[in-house]
Image (cartoon, rainbow, N blue to C red; front, side):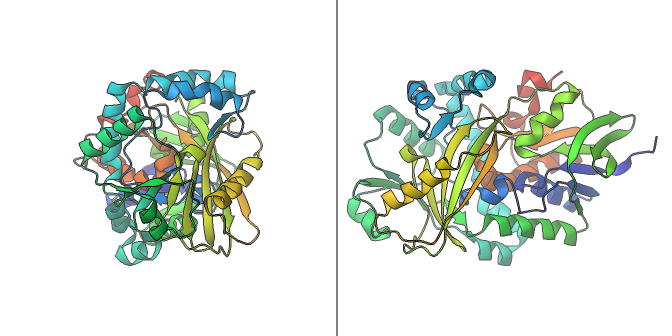
Length: 420
């Protein structure tokens, strides 16, 4: 048996994995990243909505959401849809997701989300440099549009969470919305402006640039799929189609595929593939100054280099089920409903799985009882926002540096299936 190299293997070349790799390299570690797709060409890091949600602190599950479940379960066109064949397997995750929506848990989760999100633009500038970040990122703000009156309790909770985090917001009436978004459908009568949010004009190019930075600073990225991880006497073996790679330590940052890698080790990560869709609308006749989202439709629109990206919806169907591109087509229809005068070229459609954990928080840090194995995964809908600082936090934990904030809310040990 050959000895393990004294470096670190990072499994996954999405935002979280690449951010962790770059922070580890800058801390003096030898890092090899393994992923079958070159950075920026696949997965949720490529196809996400492009939004930097620095001012979003509400988890996905909140009090009262259980009352919406019957409609979601029965309506395949709802913002959160379940394929019947997946529901039995997803039920334990769903119950934990609902339990995370209790008020006391929501407040603590919100504080942990704020720690991850608040400095996202600063973290990206630190990773890529100011010039590259300014080319790709727009701290423009974002509007949450409302077509109907929000439930009073839900609106009050959203407001309380923002105020607790010190997040500024501004209510917009219909004239203010029309001034920002000419041609917006009359059904959107009010909106909420979050000045702290923004977007990326090309998420794929952003992640590709992150990969280029890693190579330039001495890291290695190999286009190989990891089929299995195995502990050895002095480190870890990652088995790939080319044979295998050994290192003293390994980091699982494989997004929605992380759970499958951990399962053969007897580790159970309660992760569900929250499949999202997007439609890229080329040559749009509508120019948006910033992203606009309508939660009731599960739709967000963001202006990008190659057109207008309509993204959103959540589908619980399992990791390997074929895409249902009717959902992406609904996003096209939703964009045209929000902007009735919208014209565009033939849309390109995409589907990819987001790594969803029931409490809306990622797992970051070393695994108990598994020396040398760490996690940086489970960022759900917020990987573009929280991936960079997650990498900073993980690197601090692995190199003995002071963490940038309390790491306990993200610790793998909070899940019993990871303590075995």
